[in-house]
Length: 208
Image (cartoon, rainbow, N blue to C red; front, side, top):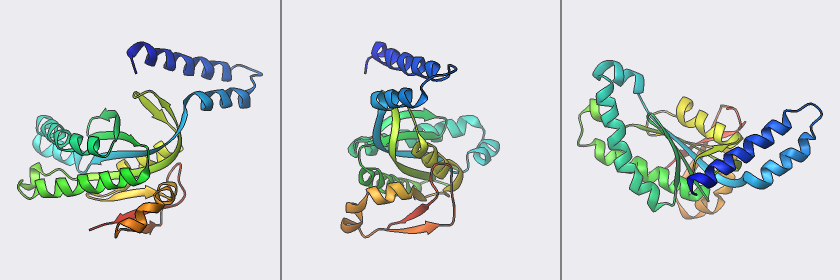
């Protein structure tokens, strides 16, 4: 999407949000217009690096910037191979969308395996430890610039605040949408006794 089209899309969205905020606005009708224009079903992946604050304090910000750079260099080809669309990079976090949850899960496993192999040859202070959260559902997508929605929030909470190093967590919606994957791969889902904003049931992926 060109910058001009992207700007037009953003302007249209915020114009409609402005109309929605007016006294007496037909909120339901405006909401339908917004979802008709921008609503699409996507799998959402949010990744985070474990130990950001600890490593910055111990080794300095330049060391950690190097880790961020190296992990993106390693993961970008894997994201492309699984048809992931990188929406946003914020410090040590990636926000990526996929058409199918199965693609997001396969990508997450490949990323964890690639990092595990890379970490075998690194001292502990330079190891890249990834946390992943995955959701699925209707979201508002503004080109390749930004996404909004409950499953975006859930994936972010699972990936950034909940998952431990090397873990892949997913929402109930993501687990259910990846139905065909469970027949193909010898992976299972373990229920989490945890609710997050946007998802009341969540799971940990068990993979080899």
